[in-house]
Length: 191
Image (cartoon, rainbow, N blue to C red; front, side, top):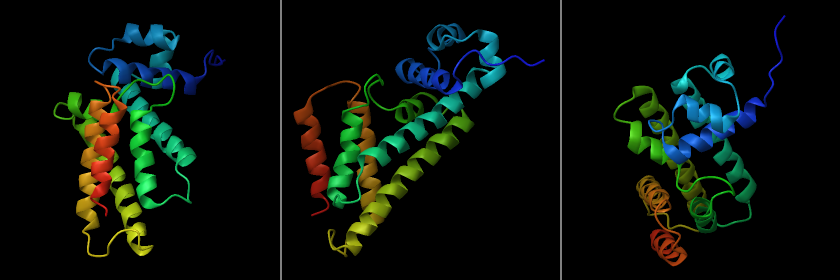
C-alpha cells in the first residue's frame, strides 16, 4: 500500500527554489535542501528526483511564480511605458520573503556554460522575456504610444538587457534613486 505524502509538494518546491536562489546550485547541498525544505532525503528523491532534477523543477517553478506575479501586478489599463516600468519595479521590489536578484540570471551566470540543460532553459526564459517586451512594444506602436519608425525587435533586446543588468544590480544595492535613474533612462529610448 502506497503511503500518502507527509508534506506539501508545492511548498517544498518553493522552499527549494528559494534556497537555490539564495545560495546557487553548487553551494546548495542535499543536506541543505533537507533542512530548508523540511522533507526527508528519501522523500526528496522519491518526489523530485536528484538534486539536478529538483533544481530544474525549481527553475520552472520560478518562472511560474514570476508569471503569476506579473499577471497580478500588470494591469491592462497601463500604458506600455507604465507596464515596462512595473516589470522593472517587480525586480527591484521583490515579493516578501524572496531573495534579491533573479534566479534565472543567477543561474545563467553560474551554470549556463557548464550545463546544456540549464543553458537551454535559461535561453528559453530569456527568449520569452524578450518576446513579452516585443509584444508590449508592438502593441504600443499600434496604439500610437511608440513611434512607428522604431525597431521594436532591437528595443526589446535593449530593454531586456537593461532588465538583466538591474536584476544583477539588485543583489548588491537597495539604492532606489539609482534604480529609478536606470529605469528612466531605459524608458527614455521609447520617446
